[in-house]
Amino acid sequence: QTIKKMNRGLFIALEGLDKSGKSTQAKLLSQKLNAQKVSFPDRTTQLGVIISDYLRGNKNMSDEVIHLLFSANRWEQHTSICNLLQNGTNIVSDRYAFSGVAFSAAKGLPIEWCKAPDAGLIQPDITFYLTAPIEELCKRGDYGREIYENSSFQHRVGSFFDILALQENFYKIDALKSIDEIQAEILNHISEKLKNNSLLQQKKLWK
Ligand code: Z5A
Ligand code: MG
Image (cartoon, rainbow, N blue to C red):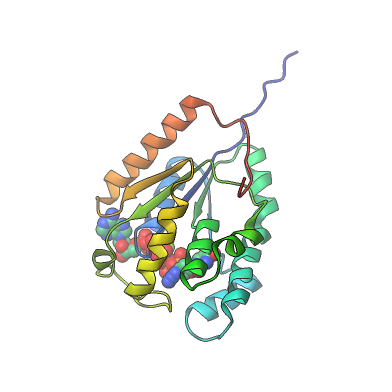
């Protein structure tokens, strides 16, 4: 009797500038792929509540402390993410460790220091980086509600995302395209990836 080996799930991350449409795409994509959606920060845990207070300007913390909390908030979900992938469930992550590095590096923390606490987390198979001129994204709904949403800071964040996007399996997407066009582009890249069958090896950050 032959036992058919089950494929593991695909781990897809959506990253990018504020209001670039990550959450919109994550929702559509998880429905389309019948995937589990995860979001970072995950504001539902105790750490997530502290992070949320910080983002709303209700709690002061040093750049180092908030950085480590964002990372710990990812580690909280790590076992569950690994188990789901192992069991064949696709996962769509709305932000991940790349946001962690880009935002803290934009505050002036050294990039290698920023990467260290996330080292060993499971690496997405594909990351989509949604980007567009900040001046355009600022016009979108709800912009400016949280502490990081000002344009000079967002420009610095963008320049660190640009550096991170040089690594393999990062696809830059023009966030000014329509929601449907972006979704189609993302699905197209994912089907290419599945064809290439380069998924067997599950990598870890930042190797
Ligand atoms: N942060 C960090 O510092 N360190 C970390 O490790 C992590 C995060 C993980 C909160 O994140 C903050 O935490 C964030 C980074 C920092 N910085 N800030 N501020 P968040 O993910 O909770 O942030 P958010 O409030 O959800 O905003 P967002 O994620 O930046 O937005 P989005 O998800 O990219 O966009 P959206 O909600 O899908 O769409 C925004 C609006 O645009 C909405 O009205 C849509 O209907 C519209 N939209 C979407 N797509 C389109 C297109 N294609 N065309 C036109 N309009 C569109
Ligand atoms: Mg969002």
